[in-house]
Length: 224
Image (cartoon, rainbow, N blue to C red; front, side, top):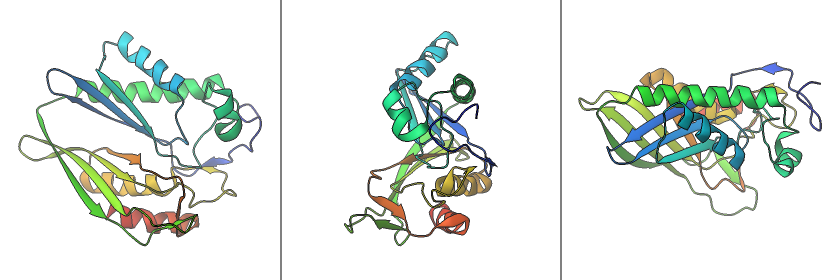
């Protein structure tokens, strides 16, 4: 297989991997925040993305790259041999370049669209959708960062929750952002703006429902 060495290759795409970006700037410092449907991010990916953005004239003070930690996302993109061996397979230059191209496009588009805005935060709780692998207490907190125009129209949403992207299970061989992508898609359909997911302290937190119906059920709860 051209892009699979240690792990089984995917058999198709259920829902496409997306790169979403939010550019924030207060006139003194800038932050370019990107969220992408990957299992994880290695430091070399961030460094290479920063280099691309600097060359493109997009040079934020801060650059954050948040992986959703879906277990059904693409592999073969990490320069780290250890990370590749235990999580995402041996690097394939074409896959890595495709991901970096999408991240760069999203970041440049967000940077070009900057306009006066207001930012607010909120916190809620969503319980009953996860279980602890250690039978320990769970954190039900869902955090939201909301960005709107000066007259209140939505620009972007960043949302945070601690849950593993394993609703689809190890037998799924279709590329998918799992339950987090389902929730973000619902938010985007309703608001018409990008919804960036940032995972929390996810170490022992598994989804309580499984399969495609489980991903949709949890995505609906989180999106709601």
